[in-house]
Length: 117
Image (cartoon, rainbow, N blue to C red; front, side):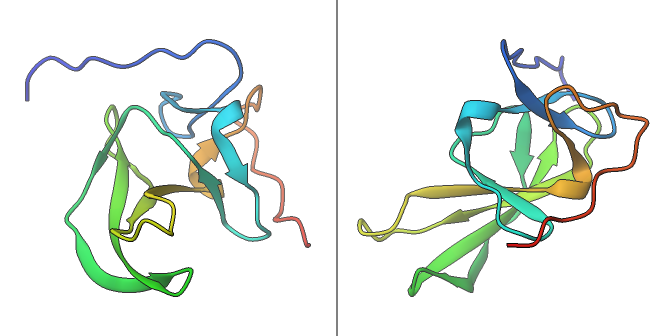
């Protein structure tokens, strides 16, 4: 593997729970549905696994899923959905709540329990 270049983020950001690498700006958080994942419009410092075709239907349209990994520690931090349909959003990045830290969250503390809707 060559030299690793990480993108630094300024302001409030979510980071990898294992190595504290920045993953997404707080302003790119789209939704915090109850449960174990949050949806972001953009992420950084992640690599993607192999495509899993037609694994999920996103808003009634076929889509493709790819697992997302932290580029520094290679932990699985979430996944990405893609859709070729113009009516649907082009990308959705889902980060698992148990794998990320919120802005200002202590990496040595357990995450809070999922919130009910």
